[in-house]
Image (cartoon, rainbow, N blue to C red; front, side, top):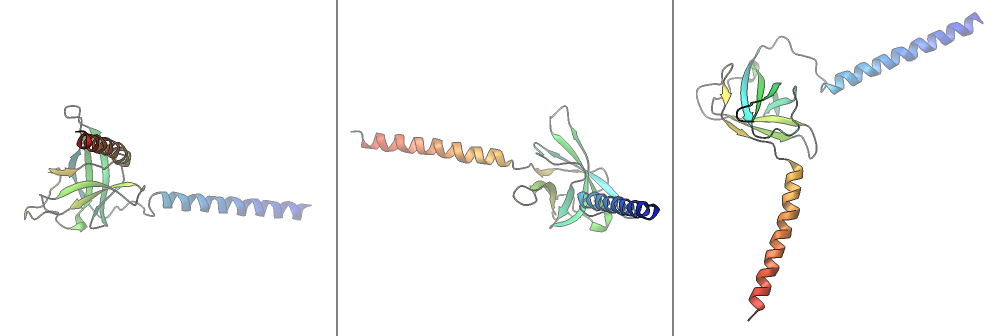
Length: 169
């Protein structure tokens, strides 16, 4: 019986090891397959948006589809009621012009939100603590669908009223 108990113990140990390895793989994949980068010192830039939709802390910041940083913090400005988003940008991305613009985009049709930066032409680069003045808020899919559905209903109603008025002598 001692040999069968040893086999059971080994099987349980292997199962737990496999379960732990699976959980580690899920943890790494939930962080977009990346571990924190320590050696690339970055700098922080502020951007203000009217609507950030589902933008989250640690979401990517991209230029031309290439990840150049991440969202470090999101706060609400109590005076203007704007979302104040702190972007942490890597220095290895180069000097980003001060007149660059930031917009909130969706990865795919229903994917996660990220901030995309469109570089400007200013010779002066963004520095630590600077604010990006040109921003574009998130496009909310539900609002677009609502405008499309109800906007067309109003247009059809007004078109039918116009047609009935034209036929009236």
